[in-house]
Length: 553
Image (cartoon, rainbow, N blue to C red; front, side, top):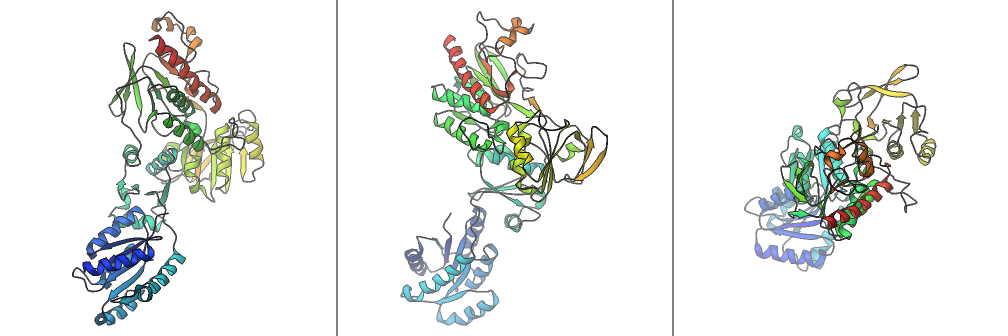
């Protein structure tokens, strides 16, 4: 925790030096002592301290100052830190003003000059005031603060981005948070212009783009080198594994991610069937460990940065980026994974990010406290989300078109769901309409066996309905199956176009696409197992084939 601040203000330099010396002698261990000769400068400093999330415990101000009287300064300082103790340092001739200020501006105490010896005339008073302040003190959150509307898609996107990148933040709802309103007023921000993001250095951004936030939190989106041995596109489990093995085996490795490390697995609240973790671990924890491990081996990680195309120049690969830049690589591993398919029902698109979410259990869990929440989907991701949300929501309802979860979910999750009182499974059901004003409020659910419809209140709907490969951006002559998954290895020989594209004497490596030196691993690859462990294995295996490809070239 940051040390609380004691702020001294006196226009007489010699007096200010003396009081600062005495304050630091007694309190430097537990407090940060700041001092200034200017009351106006002190007020400007308070605004900056407030934006940074600093805490002021005590103001000590001289009464007779040219810019304003000490009583006036303390009254203005109260608007920034109303709980801070306010003490006036005054001469004998000003005692009447000090006594009057106790009643008029709730002055906590006044001290006479000179205060020698401080052990008798200064410290006992300050000790009492600081002890009283500490008794009621609640530390400020030390991190990024987001002020916005709970049901704003832009606010959701910012929260999702920060949580995905494992960056702590405090959410302040502009409609209910006094602290949020205070930050907006302090910085002259209109509530219609939010979300606003406040950083620990005192800076803030209003209605920012994710790339602007990334720069402020130290994420890198600019490649540092002209050429890489291998560029990995996508930082899910497969991409992270490829990064670890690429870096550990001496390859000049670049890992690019458009949003946050971890992919779909990174949003999972609990992965319980991953080898070596008998108690399970969250997707974010797995991502944190993996990205730390990869960067320790010297890989370069760029995020948020989106690859929008690949072109070839002889044996070199050129990655085209959404910001217009290009990156050169000798080989590429595509690990872009899959996206959840969108649910086609009346009204749903109107509330995406405002009550309707695709794989956002962790980000929006707090907003579901005491509410009724619905989940569409019968896979493990849906089950993990239900178990997590059950800790917050009044009731969680899982809707599936099949009779139950037995054909699509792991048994350990089915058992956990069965033993959780506030989770219900609705078989033979589907959402046919979403209703609300500026946010989701109701769902219309249909029983597919009886065609009966019912309308229910819903604070949130989370959708986990199957995977669509993230390959629409890939316009190069890369062979995909009918669903858009990238074909690799021996499976390529089934396609008539393969021989037209592949001109090498050798056959493609197991994870190699029809374009030599471009590999695919993890869920984006046709025939993948859709498990975290298999994705990690394929990412590691891809680097083995990268080595063989580079040796041949």
